[in-house]
Amino acid sequence: MTIECLQLGELGTNCYLLPCGEGEVILIDIGNSAGRLMHYLETKGLTPKAILLTHGHFDHVAGVEHVRARYEIPVYIHEADANMLRSGEANLCWQISDSPFTPVKEFNTLRDGDVLTIGDRTIKVIHTPGHTPGGVCFRTGDVMFTGDTLFHLGMGRTDLGGNVPEMRRSLALLAGLDGDPAIYPGHGGSSTLAFERENDPYLGGL
Image (tube, rainbow, N blue to C red; front, side, top):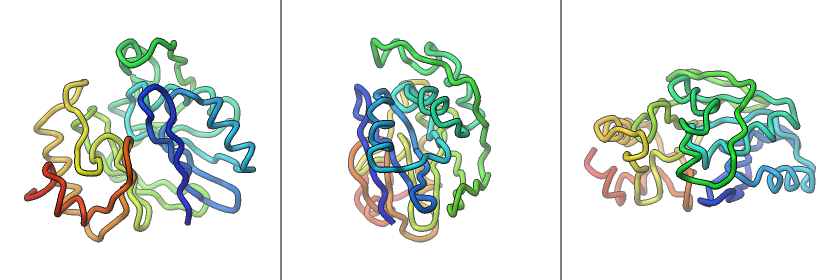
């Protein structure tokens, strides 16, 4: 399995293309530069089947409606961040970018423990509030997409509508998960959960 990553928008947000069938992919987070993403999909002959959002900040959702409307695919976000898909004020567009926000017209809400089956992928939703109230991680097999909760040797900010005690609980939850999944965060490079348990100063000892 090859997971491709494009860095989109002003903050270089990681947009992941997760294979879910022959020539089919699931898109995880879409920052600004939706046109670049769609050009890439068409150049590579890839068909998107769904959009999964780790949380609702503008730099992770700015391009969603453009891609959703083009391919007529479902969008999924945790219910606690749903308002961020409707409002540029709620998703901090005004703070992150000079570009206007295009509200998402259709989307589905998620809760902790939900399991999605998309193509040949089964994906579990893990609610990890702290960066935002509706932050989630998506786990499929030995891979986990951690959004802005857990980074390589770091964690997400808690001063953009987040909550420090919730972030600590979410990091402790991730630290206690079984196995050693590969970690694909919302910004920066990939890692593994085992490496972060041992080396991430925010995760160690939890």
